[in-house]
Structures are given as structure tokens and as C-alpha cells.
Length: 440
Image 1: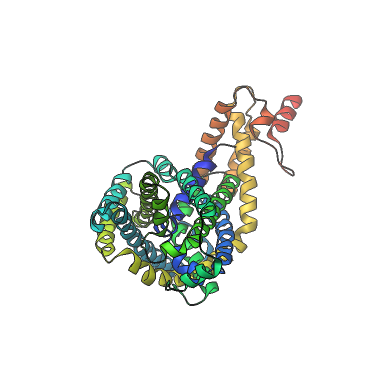
Image 2: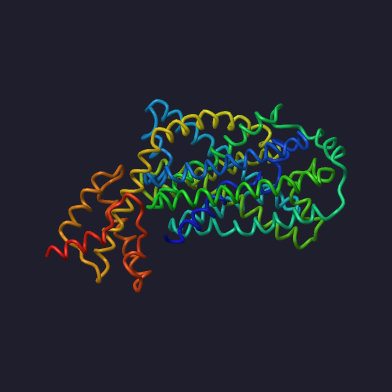
């Protein structure tokens, strides 16, 4: 198995962990405003994010999607699909300008830079990134994931080893925070739905970049687990410092400033980078939806979307989270129902397609390995498997052939059985070749 799943997993984390999560403002309003019980909601949110990562990336890989509509047109009714399309476009744009506002609030709190200027810097970086190729974009999105993990570990250790008020005092302070919703479980469901709306477009695109469905599943599991740990660690640190952070725009940054000015400086840049990741992912997915497959048109649309989003971001970060997020979250609940129904309906097909592609790749390894025989029988089987796939047969053959060549190039000195590990119930291509030679 290639290591692409690592870059996809890190990119997925970068998409989900944006301004509100990294800054702590989301967690404060949605969960910690309920005091210690809010940590139970955080744990539930972590588990749900792991499940979502696995499902979304697998569906993206299964349909080889270039944008969210590639998946929803296959798993739901046309009318429902159109409604979802409108919801995702609106939500992606709305969350994008909330994140731009978060970029401004972040730099304003740390450097006293005007909020509009910080948002403008982030908007400019988003536009510049659109001119990179997709593999490079994926690397850029994922590069900051290890940094936020390390930063959250530092925040948690500091919060645990330094004195803090009693639980009763922390809970009393938490009641001063205005909750996004009046009930913890509503908050949990709503915020998870918000994460789904935030991440589903880019998750489908990331999954669509992976040919092997098992690799996409592993990326979703790893990415979802990292997100769960980041959310849990961030929430614990915020709760233990509730007396200091309950009324600030960027709570996690306030904790960082008490550790050391240089750490606060670094944490500011990490938050800004994660905000940029999420803004780009949201606006990029929206622009691809209207590009018709044209990279040039996508870039033009993205510039327009960013300009409109920047204008909307000037309303302010904290106000936008409290007003826009619950609305988007409830729209996301409906999306969750459709996604769950689609997954249950397609799950058997996903498994069949995974086996089909594995066999196809194994056969094409023979084509590229000089030490293996590639017969007419193999060629006919490749065509048969390609036509049986749910995706375009010619494109699948090209992609599978490229991957098979990469496998051979990486493991030129390995035995054929090491190149692609056989699975139970599958015909092993090397056995077919051996049989062919014997009969010859």
C-alpha cells in the first residue's frame, strides 16, 4: 500500500479543524457552556467524526468524485440532490466567510492588527493556492496537521500541571458563556452536522483522488481519530482554564499567551494556517462545483467567491459563529440522513468495487513487470473488470495502470506476492500466469 493515505488523512484533518475548533470558540459555545457535562458531548463528537471520515472518504473513492454532486447524484433522488446542492453551496460560502472573520480576529487578538487586514491576508493566500496543482494543494492543506497536534498536547500538559479552580468554580464560570443551543445533545448533533457540512465537499474530493477504497477508508479512520484527539485535548484545556478564557474571542490563544509569548506567537500562526486551510477547502469545493471541469473557470469562480466572502466576513467572528453556525448545523442534520441512507444502500457495492479494483491492479502489475507474463487472458479480464466498475472504464484502466506501474517501480526487487497482497476469496494473478505457462 502506498503512503498516499497519510497525506489524505492529514489534509482531511486540515479541512475539519478550522477557526472555531483550533481557536476554541466553537467548543466554548457549543459544549463547555454546559460545564463538565459538555466533555461527554465532546467525546461523542469525536466518535462521530471518526465514523464520518471513514464513510465520506470511501464514498468519494468509490465514485471517484471531483465534487460533492458526483456522489449525491448517485445516492439520492434528483430533487433531494438539488436541495442538498443548494444547501452545500450556501453553507460552504457562509462557513467560509465565518472562517475569514476568524482569521482577522486571530491576528487582531495577538498582534493588534485590524481584523479586516488579517481577513484580507487569508483571502489573498486562498486565491494564490488555487493556482497550484491538486496534489500540491493536498500537501499544503495537510502540512499543518502535525503542528496543531503538538500545540494541543502542549496546551493540555500545561493546563493539567498548573493550578486551576475547582470543578464547581469552573462550572459556575461556564454558565456565563451564552450557549449556541439550549441543550447539550442538540448542540452535539448540531455541531457534528456542522462538521459534516464543513467537510463533506472536500472529503469527497480527497476520497476521489484515491483509487484504492481500502486506502481511503484507512485515511478516514486516521484523520477522524486525529480530529477526535485534537477536539478532546482542546476542550479539556479550555475547561481547566475557563476562568480566564470564557469571554475572549480566541480562547485557546489566551491560554497560549500564559505559557510563553513565543508559544503564543507560534500558536497564532498555526490557527491562522488552519483557518486558511478550511477557507480554501470550502471555497475550492464550491468553485469546483461550478467550474464544469475547467481549471481556468474554477479559478475565476473562486476569486469571485472569495471577494464576496471577504465582504461578508467584516461582520465579526464571534457574532457570526453564534448566528450562522446553528442554522447551518440544522441544515446539516438533513444532509446526515441522506448520507447515512446512501451509505447503507451502497455499502455492499463499495465492497464489491474494492475487490474489483484490487484484482484489476494485480492483473496490471503483470503488464508492467518484466518478470511476469501478461497474456491475452489477462488483457480480456482487465477489460471485463473495467466495464463492471461503477466509474468510467477507460479512466479506471488508466488510473489502475498508473498505480500498478508505481507498485512495480517501488518494489522492483520484491517477489510478485509482495507486490499486491492476496485477499481471501480472490483469484491470484500469479497463479493464473503460472497456469498459463504450464498449459503452454
